[in-house]
Length: 309
Image (cartoon, rainbow, N blue to C red; front, side, top):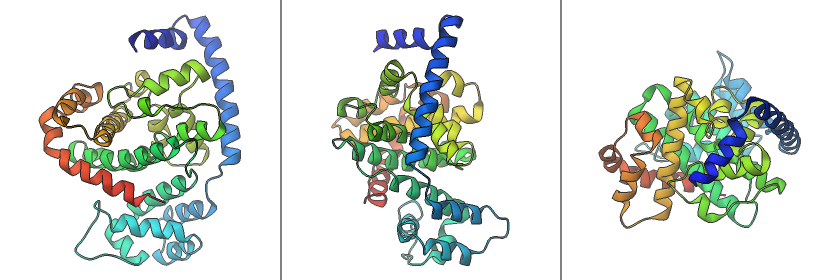
């Protein structure tokens, strides 16, 4: 992997003249792919309508409820979220009004974004699509929990960023432009392996592709940037806010993959993850991960159930 990474970095960042030519060719390929995908994958009209309502300073829950009635699957997703482990109360909820009380408008907004996006990508490929969808849902849950525990300032947008961080892979599978192996998808210790292969083959990685597409869907900042730079660390770490959110995603990514593999010696896995650049940046050590491991593992299962078809 070290050799492969050096080769890709030489292609991507080296001689200024070569970099300019490569960047131009990559940008043309990326632009074509973004145009194709946004033409095929239009963000749901009802979801846009709801987001516009929620963006008004004096919106009415009644208006959101009426809009949701046009898309029962969105309404169902909000109720699932309200009854999930993220917000579970003593009683189950069964109405949109109750969901607003429990979740708050920001979480309702994030849930609309999440459910609408996941609906656009039913299982694709040879089963890897479902694996990626499940991974995205679980990373979203874990990243939000990590943010609450370690960086409370950065909880806004982290759930949706987690849910969208790998949809570029779904786009590439759906378009037939790239395929993925189960082995690389499940590796908790090589968060950039797939991105390096993509840059070699395509000139850009799935994060950059997804970031451009979700920006075209007019999803709010910093979500497009966090998604786009999830594998562009030289950019991400130059901006503190983006660096923190990208680090949360990368740490959650590794933890989810470790949980999915269900290792007998998970403590050794957590020790290795605690030495990663993401954990180091967030100042999260092995003991902090160990003390939260069972909670994160259970939240992962809850997230998979919440976004199951």
